[in-house]
Length: 138
Image (tube, rainbow, N blue to C red; front, side, top):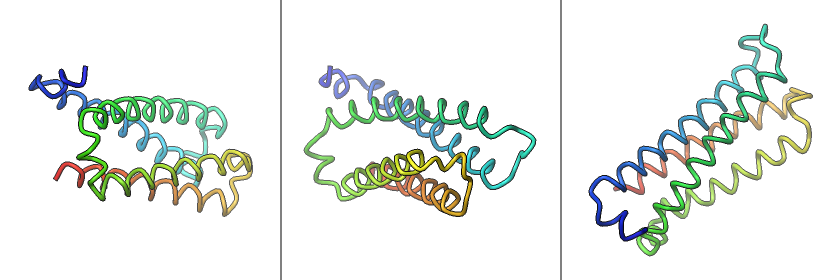
């Protein structure tokens, strides 16, 4: 399978495109949720909106994770030697820890200042992940 990724001229670019689409679903829905947390679209009830937004974000993460693992498997040595890849993996761990803490403390029900800080932190981390991902290619 990994040899197919390396030998087919279309396979790896298609995988990259799917990876970007997954990231777009993830980041786009997190930003939409963040806007709602900060008071935009206040007429939309928070819980149903959050359920929809997070479901789509998790789907995007799953797509990005699966495609990322396939891309990694086709060039593991090269990627492990790339400092931007290593930083990206650390940022992914930080994003996961932030999300876990956000949900464990019930931040969507509280919507307090800490919840807002965590939302901003989440968006910042994910943007840094995207920048690191782009630098991996160069």
